[in-house]
Image (cartoon, rainbow, N blue to C red; front, side, top):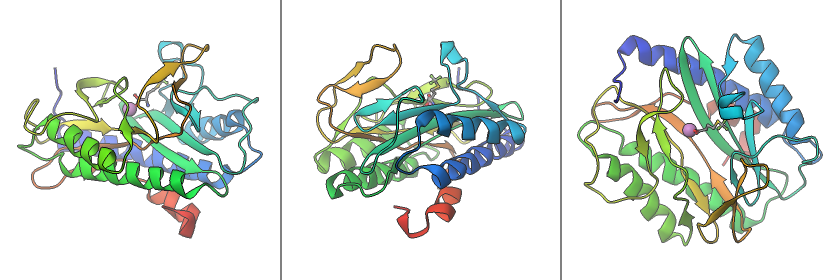
Length: 261
Ligand code: MF3
Ligand code: CO
Protein backbone atom coordinates (compact mmCIF):
# COMPACT_ATOMS: atom_id res chain seq x y z
CA UNK A 1 0.00 0.00 0.00
CA UNK A 2 1.28 3.44 -0.93
CA UNK A 3 0.64 6.18 1.62
CA UNK A 4 0.00 9.62 0.15
CA UNK A 5 1.18 12.29 2.58
CA UNK A 6 -0.74 15.39 3.58
CA UNK A 7 0.97 18.78 3.26
CA UNK A 8 1.50 18.77 7.05
CA UNK A 9 3.17 15.36 6.90
CA UNK A 10 5.40 16.49 4.04
CA UNK A 11 6.58 19.44 6.17
CA UNK A 12 7.42 17.07 9.03
CA UNK A 13 9.38 14.92 6.57
CA UNK A 14 11.22 18.02 5.35
CA UNK A 15 12.35 18.77 8.93
CA UNK A 16 13.73 15.25 9.25
CA UNK A 17 15.54 15.63 5.93
CA UNK A 18 16.99 19.02 6.88
CA UNK A 19 18.52 17.51 10.00
CA UNK A 20 19.96 14.73 7.82
CA UNK A 21 21.38 17.31 5.38
CA UNK A 22 23.05 19.12 8.29
CA UNK A 23 24.46 15.81 9.53
CA UNK A 24 26.11 15.27 6.13
CA UNK A 25 27.63 18.76 6.43
CA UNK A 26 29.21 17.74 9.76
CA UNK A 27 30.73 14.77 7.94
CA UNK A 28 31.93 16.95 5.05
CA UNK A 29 33.93 18.94 7.63
CA UNK A 30 35.87 15.89 8.81
CA UNK A 31 36.18 13.65 5.73
CA UNK A 32 39.86 13.75 4.83
CA UNK A 33 42.80 11.35 4.58
CA UNK A 34 43.50 9.74 7.98
CA UNK A 35 39.96 9.73 9.39
CA UNK A 36 38.34 6.36 10.11
CA UNK A 37 34.78 5.47 9.15
CA UNK A 38 34.10 4.70 12.84
CA UNK A 39 35.00 8.33 13.66
CA UNK A 40 32.55 9.52 11.01
CA UNK A 41 29.84 7.32 12.49
CA UNK A 42 30.42 8.83 15.95
CA UNK A 43 30.18 12.39 14.58
CA UNK A 44 26.86 11.57 12.92
CA UNK A 45 25.41 9.69 15.89
CA UNK A 46 26.17 12.52 18.31
CA UNK A 47 24.93 15.25 15.97
CA UNK A 48 21.63 13.45 15.32
CA UNK A 49 21.03 12.68 19.03
CA UNK A 50 21.95 16.25 20.08
CA UNK A 51 19.31 17.53 17.66
CA UNK A 52 16.46 15.32 18.81
CA UNK A 53 16.60 12.72 16.03
CA UNK A 54 17.07 8.98 16.09
CA UNK A 55 19.40 7.17 13.67
CA UNK A 56 17.07 4.83 11.76
CA UNK A 57 19.76 2.49 10.44
CA UNK A 58 21.14 1.70 13.91
CA UNK A 59 19.62 -1.65 14.85
CA UNK A 60 17.66 -1.96 11.60
CA UNK A 61 17.64 -5.70 10.85
CA UNK A 62 20.70 -5.83 13.10
CA UNK A 63 22.73 -3.15 11.26
CA UNK A 64 25.24 -1.93 13.87
CA UNK A 65 25.74 1.77 13.01
CA UNK A 66 24.23 5.18 12.25
CA UNK A 67 25.89 5.42 8.84
CA UNK A 68 26.48 3.06 6.00
CA UNK A 69 30.03 3.91 4.85
CA UNK A 70 31.09 2.30 1.57
CA UNK A 71 34.60 2.99 0.26
CA UNK A 72 35.74 2.76 -3.39
CA UNK A 73 34.50 -0.59 -4.78
CA UNK A 74 31.99 -0.88 -1.94
CA UNK A 75 28.56 0.09 -3.29
CA UNK A 76 26.28 0.24 -0.27
CA UNK A 77 25.75 -0.91 3.36
CA UNK A 78 29.42 -0.75 4.39
CA UNK A 79 29.85 -0.98 8.18
CA UNK A 80 31.84 1.83 9.85
CA UNK A 81 35.06 0.52 11.41
CA UNK A 82 38.11 1.85 13.23
CA UNK A 83 40.15 -0.32 10.82
CA UNK A 84 38.97 1.59 7.72
CA UNK A 85 41.21 4.66 7.39
CA UNK A 86 40.41 6.98 4.48
CA UNK A 87 43.32 7.82 2.20
CA UNK A 88 43.99 10.37 -0.51
CA UNK A 89 42.22 9.39 -3.75
CA UNK A 90 39.45 7.32 -2.11
CA UNK A 91 35.76 7.92 -2.53
CA UNK A 92 33.34 7.26 0.32
CA UNK A 93 29.60 6.80 -0.07
CA UNK A 94 27.71 7.71 3.08
CA UNK A 95 24.07 6.64 3.38
CA UNK A 96 21.91 7.37 6.40
CA UNK A 97 18.35 7.78 7.64
CA UNK A 98 16.93 9.73 10.58
CA UNK A 99 13.63 9.39 12.42
CA UNK A 100 12.33 12.82 13.51
CA UNK A 101 8.73 13.89 14.19
CA UNK A 102 7.61 10.33 13.43
CA UNK A 103 9.00 10.42 9.89
CA UNK A 104 12.10 8.98 8.31
CA UNK A 105 14.46 10.89 6.04
CA UNK A 106 16.91 9.12 3.73
CA UNK A 107 19.86 10.49 1.80
CA UNK A 108 23.25 9.40 0.49
CA UNK A 109 26.30 11.23 -0.81
CA UNK A 110 29.58 10.06 -2.33
CA UNK A 111 32.45 12.26 -1.15
CA UNK A 112 35.86 12.42 -2.81
CA UNK A 113 38.74 12.16 -0.30
CA UNK A 114 41.58 14.52 -1.23
CA UNK A 115 42.60 14.34 -4.88
CA UNK A 116 40.52 11.78 -6.82
CA UNK A 117 41.29 10.54 -10.37
CA UNK A 118 39.38 12.44 -13.09
CA UNK A 119 37.68 9.27 -14.38
CA UNK A 120 36.27 8.61 -10.91
CA UNK A 121 35.23 12.26 -10.43
CA UNK A 122 33.30 11.91 -13.69
CA UNK A 123 31.48 8.85 -12.29
CA UNK A 124 30.42 10.92 -9.27
CA UNK A 125 29.21 13.81 -11.45
CA UNK A 126 27.24 11.56 -13.79
CA UNK A 127 25.61 9.68 -10.91
CA UNK A 128 24.52 12.92 -9.25
CA UNK A 129 23.20 14.25 -12.58
CA UNK A 130 21.24 11.01 -13.07
CA UNK A 131 19.67 11.44 -9.64
CA UNK A 132 18.44 14.95 -10.50
CA UNK A 133 17.21 13.83 -13.93
CA UNK A 134 15.32 10.97 -12.27
CA UNK A 135 13.81 13.43 -9.79
CA UNK A 136 12.53 15.57 -12.69
CA UNK A 137 10.35 12.56 -13.60
CA UNK A 138 8.82 12.37 -10.10
CA UNK A 139 5.75 14.39 -11.09
CA UNK A 140 2.03 13.70 -11.21
CA UNK A 141 1.01 11.56 -14.17
CA UNK A 142 4.45 10.12 -14.98
CA UNK A 143 5.11 6.45 -14.31
CA UNK A 144 7.61 4.81 -12.02
CA UNK A 145 9.46 3.36 -15.02
CA UNK A 146 10.10 6.89 -16.30
CA UNK A 147 12.34 7.52 -13.28
CA UNK A 148 14.35 4.32 -13.73
CA UNK A 149 14.62 4.63 -17.51
CA UNK A 150 15.90 8.20 -17.23
CA UNK A 151 18.58 7.27 -14.68
CA UNK A 152 19.64 4.18 -16.63
CA UNK A 153 19.87 5.97 -19.97
CA UNK A 154 21.96 8.81 -18.56
CA UNK A 155 24.45 6.47 -16.88
CA UNK A 156 24.72 3.83 -19.59
CA UNK A 157 25.23 6.50 -22.25
CA UNK A 158 28.33 7.54 -20.28
CA UNK A 159 29.57 3.91 -20.29
CA UNK A 160 28.62 3.09 -16.68
CA UNK A 161 26.39 0.32 -15.34
CA UNK A 162 23.38 0.38 -13.00
CA UNK A 163 23.19 -1.86 -9.92
CA UNK A 164 20.03 -4.01 -9.94
CA UNK A 165 20.09 -5.62 -6.49
CA UNK A 166 19.44 -2.41 -4.53
CA UNK A 167 16.70 0.08 -5.34
CA UNK A 168 15.01 3.20 -4.02
CA UNK A 169 11.70 3.05 -2.19
CA UNK A 170 8.74 4.85 -0.75
CA UNK A 171 9.49 6.51 2.59
CA UNK A 172 7.47 7.99 5.44
CA UNK A 173 6.45 6.60 8.83
CA UNK A 174 8.44 3.55 7.72
CA UNK A 175 11.96 3.76 6.31
CA UNK A 176 10.99 1.46 3.47
CA UNK A 177 7.49 1.83 2.08
CA UNK A 178 6.01 0.87 -1.27
CA UNK A 179 6.76 1.28 -4.10
CA UNK A 180 10.22 0.04 -5.09
CA UNK A 181 11.98 2.69 -7.17
CA UNK A 182 14.33 0.94 -9.61
CA UNK A 183 17.23 2.81 -11.18
CA UNK A 184 16.57 1.04 -14.47
CA UNK A 185 13.45 0.29 -16.45
CA UNK A 186 11.30 1.30 -19.35
CA UNK A 187 9.56 4.57 -19.99
CA UNK A 188 5.78 4.16 -19.68
CA UNK A 189 6.02 1.10 -17.40
CA UNK A 190 4.94 0.84 -13.78
CA UNK A 191 2.41 2.65 -11.62
CA UNK A 192 1.24 6.19 -12.30
CA UNK A 193 2.76 8.69 -9.86
CA UNK A 194 0.40 10.74 -7.70
CA UNK A 195 0.82 14.00 -5.82
CA UNK A 196 1.76 13.26 -2.19
CA UNK A 197 3.81 10.11 -2.88
CA UNK A 198 7.16 10.35 -1.09
CA UNK A 199 10.06 8.49 -2.66
CA UNK A 200 13.73 7.94 -1.86
CA UNK A 201 15.54 7.90 -5.21
CA UNK A 202 19.03 6.46 -5.00
CA UNK A 203 21.05 5.46 -8.06
CA UNK A 204 24.03 3.17 -7.38
CA UNK A 205 26.25 3.37 -10.45
CA UNK A 206 29.41 1.42 -11.32
CA UNK A 207 32.44 2.48 -13.32
CA UNK A 208 32.78 -1.11 -14.53
CA UNK A 209 30.32 -4.00 -14.52
CA UNK A 210 27.16 -3.92 -12.45
CA UNK A 211 27.55 -7.25 -10.65
CA UNK A 212 27.85 -7.02 -6.87
CA UNK A 213 28.78 -9.48 -4.15
CA UNK A 214 28.16 -9.33 -0.41
CA UNK A 215 31.29 -9.34 1.75
CA UNK A 216 31.92 -11.70 4.71
CA UNK A 217 30.26 -9.30 7.19
CA UNK A 218 26.89 -10.10 5.60
CA UNK A 219 26.15 -6.42 4.83
CA UNK A 220 28.71 -4.73 2.63
CA UNK A 221 27.94 -4.92 -1.08
CA UNK A 222 30.93 -4.41 -3.40
CA UNK A 223 31.42 -4.57 -7.14
CA UNK A 224 32.55 -8.01 -8.29
CA UNK A 225 35.20 -6.42 -10.55
CA UNK A 226 36.41 -4.17 -7.68
CA UNK A 227 35.98 -1.02 -9.74
CA UNK A 228 34.50 2.02 -7.94
CA UNK A 229 30.80 2.76 -7.52
CA UNK A 230 28.92 5.94 -6.60
CA UNK A 231 25.66 6.48 -4.69
CA UNK A 232 23.60 9.66 -4.34
CA UNK A 233 20.16 9.72 -2.74
CA UNK A 234 17.48 12.31 -2.03
CA UNK A 235 13.96 11.92 -0.65
CA UNK A 236 11.31 13.73 -2.71
CA UNK A 237 7.57 14.35 -2.79
CA UNK A 238 5.73 13.89 -6.10
CA UNK A 239 3.88 17.07 -7.13
CA UNK A 240 2.17 18.50 -10.21
CA UNK A 241 4.74 19.88 -12.63
CA UNK A 242 7.81 19.73 -10.33
CA UNK A 243 8.99 17.33 -7.65
CA UNK A 244 9.49 18.78 -4.17
CA UNK A 245 12.97 17.71 -3.03
CA UNK A 246 12.79 17.17 0.74
CA UNK A 247 16.42 16.25 1.39
CA UNK A 248 19.20 18.68 0.60
CA UNK A 249 22.88 18.74 -0.33
CA UNK A 250 22.98 22.52 0.29
CA UNK A 251 24.63 22.22 3.72
CA UNK A 252 27.32 19.98 2.23
CA UNK A 253 27.84 22.62 -0.45
CA UNK A 254 28.31 25.35 2.20
CA UNK A 255 31.12 23.32 3.78
CA UNK A 256 32.86 22.17 0.58
CA UNK A 257 32.66 25.47 -1.32
CA UNK A 258 34.43 25.15 -4.66
CA UNK A 259 35.24 21.48 -3.89
CA UNK A 260 31.49 20.74 -4.21
CA UNK A 261 30.70 18.95 -7.45
N1 MF3 B 1 19.52 4.20 3.67
C1 MF3 B 1 19.32 2.84 3.28
C2 MF3 B 1 18.29 2.79 2.20
O1 MF3 B 1 18.36 3.60 1.36
C3 MF3 B 1 18.90 2.05 4.45
C4 MF3 B 1 19.93 1.15 4.85
S1 MF3 B 1 19.86 1.07 6.52
C5 MF3 B 1 20.63 -0.37 6.87
O2 MF3 B 1 17.40 2.02 2.12
F1 MF3 B 1 20.46 -0.50 8.12
F2 MF3 B 1 20.09 -1.36 6.19
F3 MF3 B 1 21.87 -0.25 6.57
CO1 CO C 1 17.11 4.61 0.74
